[in-house]
Length: 94
Image 1 (cartoon, rainbow, N blue to C red):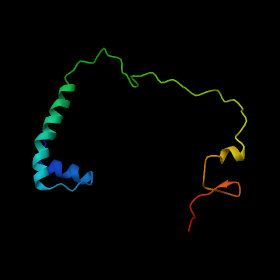
Image 2 (cartoon, one colour):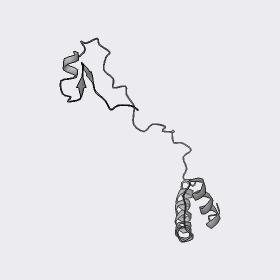
Image 3 (cartoon, one colour):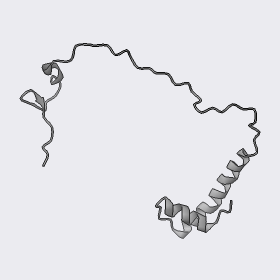
């Protein structure tokens, strides 16, 4: 892949970045080097390697859905200073 100033400017435009000419000059060799390192991955033989879509096994860690008593209104409002007539008091909407 040819990495030049035009490519950097195009990618910056797509990313909605306003890069100066100085920044484009700075990033051009950096992007070339990054892409060279990624191209080395193409050389690795992965023919006999099983794909790993999720390297860590995911388990459902949810608790059982058990019916339990709810908080009373007084307990729910116990730790708030912002309450009125038995309800939470929020900011007024205009």
